[in-house]
Amino acid sequence: MASSGQNSAGRTDGQAGQRLLEASERAIDRFLDAAWMERGLSRNTLTAYRTDLVALARWLAARGCELPAADREHILGFIAERVEGGARPRSSARQLSSFRRYFRWQVREQGSGKDPTADISMPKIGRPLPKSLTEDEVEALLDAPDTADPLGHRDRTMLEVLYATGLRVTELVNLTLAQVNLNQGVVRITGKGGRERLIPLGEESIEWLQQFIAGPRAEILAEKQTDYLFPTRRGDRMTRQAFWHIIKRYSQRAGIARALSPHVLRHAFATHLLNHGADLRVVQMLLGHSDLSTTQIYTHVARERLRDLHARHHPRG
Image (tube, rainbow, N blue to C red):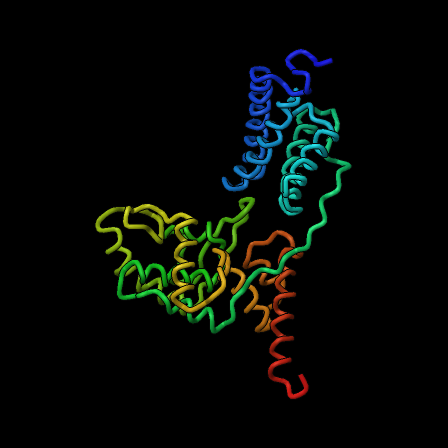
């Protein structure tokens, strides 16, 4: 027999479901506020948590349950339904990770109760190797912008800085003038979790930055004011999406056939450092990885590259 607020199919009626969803969203807001204050998580990370948790909350509300009251069977049912709908293991693993963070926080906040995700195993997923570029492809990409144009000069400088430092794209587009010290040749970055790191710029990117700041940057701004190092003509910072389109346009111009992600030069930065003998822990520090295992994936890329070079150039390869 259907319970109050539920129809004969076991689904919650509209108004009752809406009340349950609103209660769940209030709990999600409290969790996100706590996560931001305790760990200084980025806006992108918090948005991802919200997206995952709201999806679960909607599914639960349709079944007469608030998020804080979810049990193990609820979580497994939600994941199973998504898998049946074609969700990939990586997507399910990401969502389960979000759920775990929420329910662990809830247990800590309440001082009692049980984490319904505690006994749920993560889906097994293969860790894909990051797509990288050869050194010749990087050179072609860097040479693609028309540096006689102020925007082209800006784009070339951004690509040079990205390849020289291995910054995340979000870190690059949010760079301010105050973060760059050309006299010392370093850039100061506050990355994930509020961790700060100093990264050398290298002679080539320093030279491009000096030229850009001395002239093209002011031409782009046309008397507008901003602290962002790489502004748009509106005087604002560039978005990650806009930079993705820049990479895409210049990769086509450079004759690079495969699609490139916004992080392609970050991957190339790490891979090429390791190819040329850099210590893995140094690369970890420069990339801002909290865990060395995250950086170790690049050693696989480097080994593949070395095997390829050996096969092509050794007389018995």
